[in-house]
Length: 90
Image (cartoon, rainbow, N blue to C red):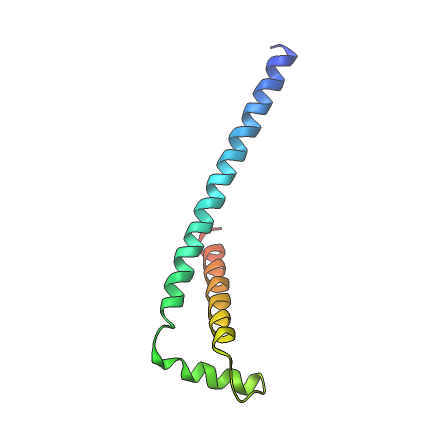
């Protein structure tokens, strides 16, 4: 096998590996996105007042801004989804 052919084969293998890695990353991201959205929907009811009250205590605040609370829920749901992926699929 010539040196040129060996180099071509190496580039082809590297390209295939890169494409496979990108597909796996896309599948991982899609799973996490879907799971996080599912978890976020669990917070879409009127029973969240307990969480809000606990946050008020922990943050030493009389009120919790709705945008801050929503971002908190999004952050924690995405973190949980990532954790579940890592636990179940690694």
